[in-house]
Amino acid sequence: MSVIGWSLIILFFTLSSSAPDAIPRFDIPHFDKIGHFGLFFVLTVLLFQALKPLDKMIKWIGLFVYCIFLGVITEYLQTKIPGRSGDVLDLIADLVGSISGFFVTFYINSHYRSVN
Image 1 (cartoon, rainbow, N blue to C red):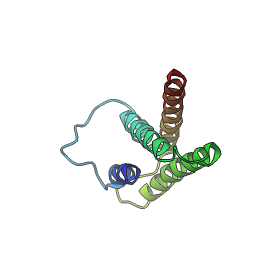
Image 2: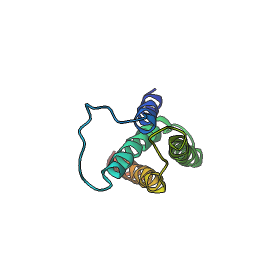
Image 3: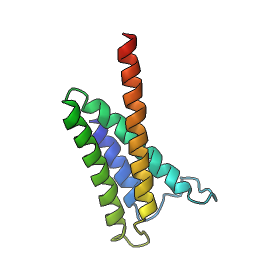
Image 4: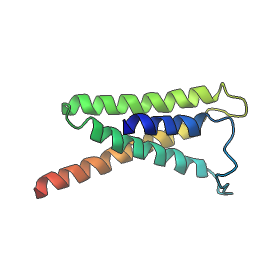
């Protein structure tokens, strides 16, 4: 359920026609890339844990297909929303966040397994 909830959060933030006024605005170039990275990092960690019982190859393929699909579809859908536009750099930030989340989770799980 946490993967679905987090996916809905990603959809909300990436597909809103404009950012809510309650969210502080920063005058930092490409600050949104950090947001994309973070959202997909957390998504990957949650998805990695949700798919943990599955075979390794199925888990890896499922993880990357889902994250790539969600990143591509949100960027595409942004081109259809007034005031928004899809951005290849956002997609790259999504993918780098996912890859980083995967490696961090994989490392932690491997380390934890070797300690026990």
